[in-house]
Length: 137
Image (cartoon, rainbow, N blue to C red; front, side, top):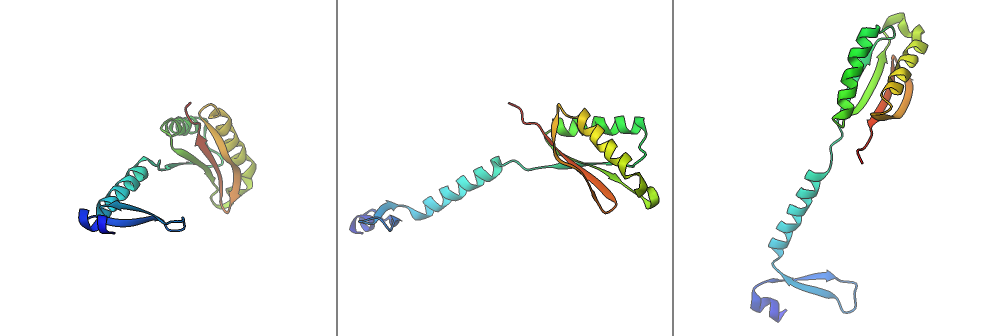
């Protein structure tokens, strides 16, 4: 304690359970500043997950399907997750099987760019499927 007062620094207890307790003489405010700086840098490096959505109808035409598939490819190449869903309006819910076939067709065609995270599942009037991009090695 005398040495820390002499140097005008703080005596910080590092490991209180050790025998004898381990202490360090440092500038505590500078230590806190450095710690915040490290945490901020780690937070900046953490990747943010972006989810892009593509909507289909149960009777989506071939041209529209191809157009939306190109967008899906672009999203997966950019590293975003893809949420593809078929929205059933009114009585079109009777075409559940067509919607599932459409989503499975999309999954098989995007197989080299991403892997299916969740298979097509009906939630209310939507049948959703998630595709995650494949990581580059």
